Image 1 (cartoon, rainbow, N blue to C red):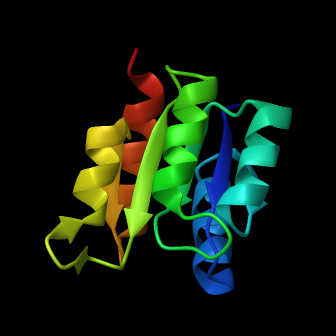
Image 2 (cartoon, rainbow, N blue to C red; image 1 turned 60 degrees about the vertical axis):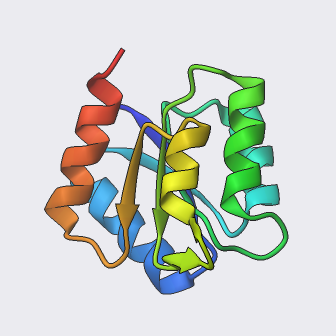
Length: 123
């Protein structure tokens, strides 16, 4: 069973993602922000990380950088409902930094599970 770390500051979204993933048969751990997420990542070395981009304490772009600095082959899916700030598209930036996939909020549960499956299956 694959282990997935979900880093998301919004409690409702975090719980929903957790339930969706558990219904898909995944073992899920959670963190409320990037700083706590990095501590969990370093302790557990999950098979996949799903991280929000806009969070307090430590935002998702920095979290992605740190994860890939620790483990360059880490599998990451970035999620965000934040869209754009000026000319910056947060999800596009996450992909350019090394996120394997991106998913705008709100998303369909089946789409999330499909992207997780594809990401975990990729070399």
